[in-house]
Image (cartoon, rainbow, N blue to C red):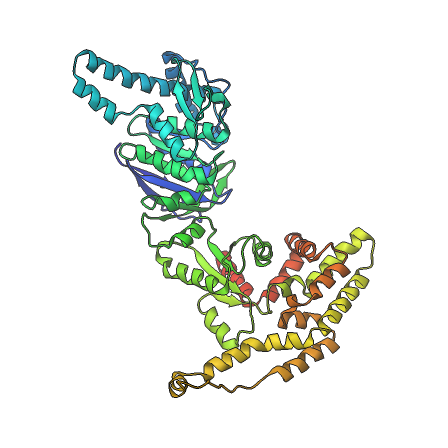
Length: 549
């Protein structure tokens, strides 16, 4: 296939499209969130490519067989090929498949036809006593059934397929009886169908594959597809639209097209917000996964997606940003710095948000210069249990339980304050802990270590505990729950449980889920919580305002 240049119209009135040269051996992965226009772009490429060079495998493909029998004649197969080429260029083909049953019949017909063509070529040379040529063909052109079975094995699928009598396709598990391929599992059928279409295609074919991972577990899809594409690396090209980020990561020689959004005119997609990442770009693998699956802006937060309070809260507060939990605050900083260091080869802007954890103003200022922001409050719990959130949940509970909102709020505050009273000394000491450690660390230097080689090293520092305890007790007297939760590690008391119980929630986890749900549906509450997040919210608002100017 001679090189073809595909063109992608850009949104935002950019007159210059993205040019994508394509030739045999190329792989292009298209990634992006749902609604970013992946399938529509596949349809656009169909229209730009020669009809006789395109093999399209749609996301809405049928993967079940009525039977394992082949009911196509050569004439009917040729007629179907002309029909499918014409239909693929219709706009409806983006979401509707033409004659699904015939498509699968054509797959089986092509598989048997390729096997028989190979067998006839070998037989002809054997009949002419040209055994060397027969052996050469056998070695260079392996049986398509053998190729498929090897691919299934690489995907850890234990099934094999075989041609019974040129009419019935059979499958077999180890130590089992043969059975119709119609009875294979979804993953087995899906893998077999894709493999057969790739193996039997003519040289110079451009494959347009939408969501190849359908019906297959991620542990299967990556080794299977990587090996399948390698089979036709020399004489075909592949364009793959996928949600499975492991695929482009596992194929570093491929280009990656990141789609952020698309622009519609009527019922047709006409332009895309897209970015090409060239092969072997110097992006660490773990960050490449996050870039490919993200929007234009990423916010790295602490915790993990399974049990983190940060992830669901910030996902609700910042719906237009990809939220990625990174574990510790150190990992958050590393992720932000890593993307900033490779900004020349991607268009993702990275931010980090970490708990304040008694950090000094100087430390926080230094981090902000690198797009890492500290909460204005001690930790994310202070956002869940601030007065704005408590009031919103109290109002919701009052409506559903026929209770008095103000009484619920009053009880929640009283119960939380009483719980914190019992923890005064612990809260004050925990607040001072980081400050004392940092003071001692700054006081210690290499000269002290050198001058005391055999003695204990003593470091003197002021103890802020008494002042902090006075401050804590003052806030208790003022019943200022907001400031207490914002300044101290209240999670180490039972105050949060008391708040949830007072608001008649089943437990604090139930209360926290109610808060994130309320934020998604209550813009006023969301804005109030975002203000409590601190400078990060202001920074993101500034960026958004610049986009609209």
